Length: 451
Ligand code: ADP
Ligand code: ASP
Ligand code: MG
Image (cartoon, rainbow, N blue to C red):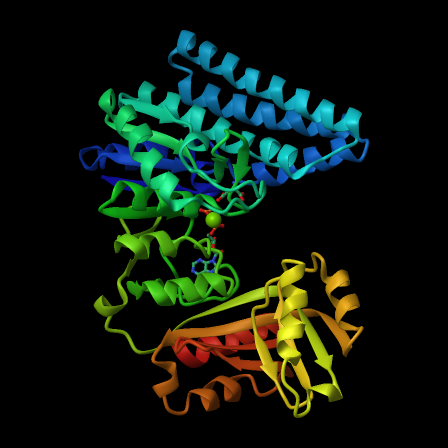
């Protein structure tokens, strides 16, 4: 079997869903499990609905809910207009979902309480709605399809907004649920992003998590391939929406893809590759608007004969923290003490560089940062710099590539560089620049290495 994941833009309207139907139809013989995201931007809107209900603007939240309902109804009506009774039934189910959403928004508003648990429940409506409409559309188009609720087999802990998958439980439950669904159908559709605890509570995998769902299902089902259908034809040399003349990379290794997504390339969720590596399942990134293009194939490291720089990724908004303490000089235990503080508040550090008396590091969120800096300032001097961006040059055997640093920093010599870190791995060199320089830095680097 194969897994085919369709992201938000690939299901954004009726034209996109019609393309999906034809793409899936051609793969029926491969027994696809189709994983879908919410329609593009719907998760953002649901987040706003939750926040407005909480902050007292229930009318605003209900108005947004209405626009979402109209969008889903319009899409279903366009897709199923030729089959009126079938459409009517579909529309009444869609309206049921919105009755529930309004109910939850009302409760959040009355109680003035928005727990992570409630937020996870609210954000799950996007995928529940999209999967239901596409399930109905596939069947109406003659593709025999069943639907499986991902919350029953993508099992996580109770970290509601970023559930940690329980691989063993998923390995056990996903084949049971999905094989049962395959008994009566050629295709099974399920939701990306949403998950559940062992006790049946609704969790989510974190933003952009549908790719991760696809990989977890691929692992649990021993899939032959995981296809990520998106709005670009594969992983490019850098983000094609930010730099001109990028090109799609034909094949890349699991490590390169993992590094690229970890350091900011949104085309894949950073956790996606791990389950694929576990079972050595090829991952293909494809364009749903140009399905004939071959996209990018991501394979085991040994199977990819590449060398040198392969791609450039970036994170636009990061924070640089500088820590200075004379106590660092000739003492031990300082770094342990420092990182314990980050650990205590669950803030993960991306880049680090140290000197005798100072440490610079980067984080990509300001969540809990006040608490971290307050605690560190008890034993060291701390400064925080916002408006920075992080750029990573990713490739294979970079340490053995002579003259690499000269080429990278020569190409961007007119810009200020705040911090440099050559990855502990052999596959990335990362550095920090001012946010306003980001576009010209990535454009210059792209010219240097790929044009
Ligand atoms: P989906 O909704 O299908 O999951 P995403 O928006 O999450 O799609 O990811 C696709 C986007 O990733 C592209 O539109 C592109 O702007 C961005 N992107 C960033 N870096 C890269 C890259 N190196 N190659 C391709 N796309 C990239
Ligand atoms: N719909 C979710 C999000 O927007 C998950 C995803 O699209 O991968 O984050
Ligand atoms: Mg995505």
